Image (cartoon, rainbow, N blue to C red; front, side, top):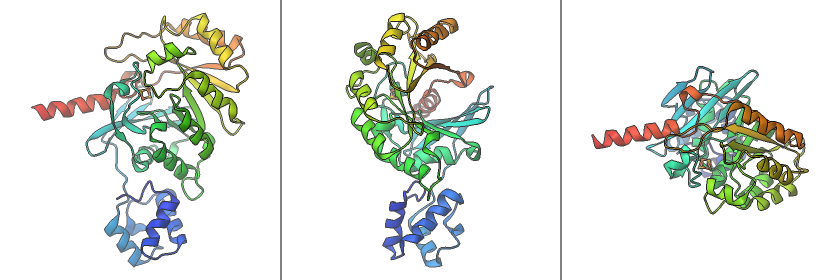
Length: 344
Ligand code: SF4
């Protein structure tokens, strides 16, 4: 069992098992999340008895990525082995003063979005808070990181328990002490879980919208759990998004599908009065996909149309295209290699 990835309450339960007071749990959290030790022996302010117990029953649980692909633009994609024999990806994205890590919350995904490589893998399992945080902690650029986005493989709110635990560790004063404003979770819109996330965390929220029309959106994101757009927007309107917490909408632009003036008009109507931003994302082609990205001037035209209607919209710069920018490509290749090795 791993110690890394345990919340303070879980560490208190560990210390109680050997009759130690609660402050011993804070000491362990300090070693794990502030002093970044790699073995129990380094926890020198714990009694020898406690260290022996921890070494016998637990491991720290930090594991290095199995490989890395580096783009010309500095983006790196790290591949991690999880759940014994599955693979997930985390992307490191440096950009001037910012250094962002995009982390995964599941191996594969149940949601089946038809434009997504991870969706094509199907669901392989939920990551534990240890496996989620290990992506952040074990990359060489760990100390340079300024932002974390839960936008990698999987639907984070479909694994809400472990995701909330990881957020508690990242933002707790006994943990990494990160400001929630530097962390964003992206979801396709599971309404019950959005409420829980907004109540239990202060991190930013990004909704993958991709169309303002329900029927069209359901074709792109067919999972039945995807709630209607009006339900999602209704929840967003209930919560107070102040300066400390932001809501944004992700919008992948597909040529001839969701890039018309009618889409601009409906987006402006839908989001009227909500303090938010639309991040327009150019579609990154995936093998076997019939979707195409609009031309660069069509993308900026779409953005300008939204801005003219009072909706703040920006085009997200494409990063890591030479190493397969679409999330899930690297892990799919690794999984295929593994299958090939099995049949040889
Ligand atoms: S886009 Fe996100 S929610 Fe949809 S299949 Fe891919 S990983 Fe899952």
